[in-house]
Length: 354
Image (cartoon, rainbow, N blue to C red; front, side, top):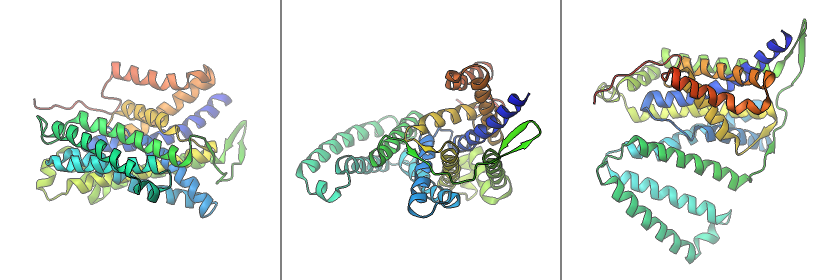
């Protein structure tokens, strides 16, 4: 019994972190019916920005969280404007301009390696850049100006999100290197006993922060005018536009809120495990996606319950089966829920006109 209670506490800690990340997935899907596969990398960036703030400003958890939230909030808006909004616009010129601009940024980042002035003055770089951009322009223009003139295909947005995920993760490795970084101990990690049980104050703090942020999100969505606008856009984007709501602003706000929650989760993970890994975003992002699907993608309570259930199941599997089954449990749950109840625990079937 002592082991079970201790593992339940560990599962709630991990599940709270999964739930914070899963909320970003489920909110974006609820608004635009698309999966933001760059969300896990935003979580990873939050951990590194928090570490950078601690090293440059002050050795404080509050400083780390504030820096991560501000930076990742803007990063989330940037992802929405670059990877998603151009594919919702009517003009192919917006898609072409966005893709070419992002390509130029990537070329500068990859080839400059900190010496932007030197690479800009290099004729070889510009010849290669012009050739690459010309080929991209030709490919994108032919694709967007064809049958899918509006560029609003879901597969296009999915590929764009995956591309943005690769860009973000590789940018972090380009700037920091592929190695792990040691996270400082930002919170006192002491334990106290309650009878036969030993409880970690750090775990209780992470659980408390997770649930407070979940309640804050619930309050924003259900008790504010912005939340009402979010629900209206989620229900019917065109009808919300006719009612005077700016859907682009609401969608950007949704990405902002989801990215801020992921940033806090990144700092909590760094504090809990004392490491920041540039490769951690993919695995945590996939598991949070599993949690969102388990609870019912698009449902905020479902993301919370799915995250907690996944965290508890994963920790119990590690404790009573084998640590090598940690990832297999998560994706086994995904396969099971897709076979038995594809809409998830809290999901509902949607009727669409065809």
